[in-house]
Amino acid sequence: MTAKKALQALGRLKTGAMNKTEQAYAATLDARRQAGEVAWFKFEGMKFRLADNTFFTVDFAVMMSDGKMEMHEVKGFMLDDANVKIKVAASLYPFVFKVIRKGKGGAWSVTEI
Image (cartoon, rainbow, N blue to C red):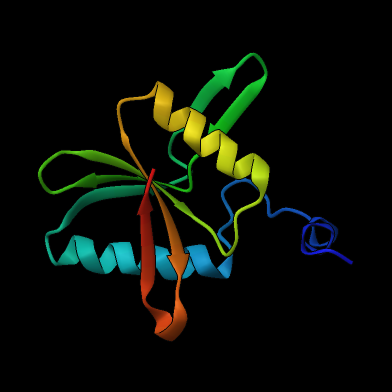
């Protein structure tokens, strides 16, 4: 079974429910909020229209302490459709889009799109 089929076999979580990686990243964002780096964040707080009947809901909408808005997409691994959607969203909307991955040793890897 391919990784994609294994993922699809597991099914998707309900809207508004975080997986374990997203929960860990939310804790990181909360610590950054308490430290004054992040002013606000919301899980699945923004949905972007990419085309007719095509939408992208980002994992975390994040307002930095300087007021800049960033969109953070947390991924264990990236399927092709998610990769295309985040790139299209980044080209259409005036926000910084970042892909966040959990690296070895628990550190977060950040890639700006």
